[in-house]
Length: 311
Image (cartoon, rainbow, N blue to C red; front, side, top):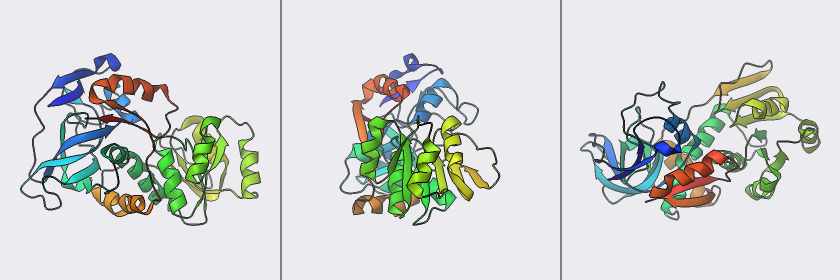
């Protein structure tokens, strides 16, 4: 099979288009013929070796954790899928070796969900990691209808999912972005804030009538996280996916590392797609062979929504 992999950690020059054997199929596993695979910032971290201490690894390491495709084969114990089914999922295994930037990938059946009927493979591939991160993060902070939610980086891959899921829960959502993305955030249902605005807190107070944020979702850490803390009310809840936040008086803080879950995809993400309450935005697609070019765009920052490889 074709695969984009690395034989050593480093920059984009380490990416190679290789011919490798398909991954082995476990008794509870699903072998997926990949039709599309989304890029995520973690792919850069893996390529550079920044995840090597967190996961066992075996070279060559195939990159990619998001996939949508067609079931090629199933293990003897699998009951949810059969060959020919269209499936999508967040395919993070417990070791770094068999990623999704390849013709085939394999994961336990519980990682996958049946694809929504109306989505293309590219759209479905853009959903799992970002959608699950957004859903699980909002579950952590217990977001409820009518609450104020503050989102950092609302136009990004995870951020634009958080905005849509927050709106679907009935929250009043505000999100930071560059001015070029403010119209996009309004289309998603969020009040846009310029993350460079030195008067962001004052503007927040004007928008809310002096109320603080009940919940915040931080995607970037650093100054963005500090902006989130600045608008929180006493007793508010903040979750970060970038860095474990330091405890703050009067604010409940949590760190999220997203978990694969076909159940969450099938029960919480797929129905919203069918109802029109959630849609992935894809900025650009590339063929598998152009993975290095796609990564260059990802590393440049300011991506609106998601970037996807097609096979």
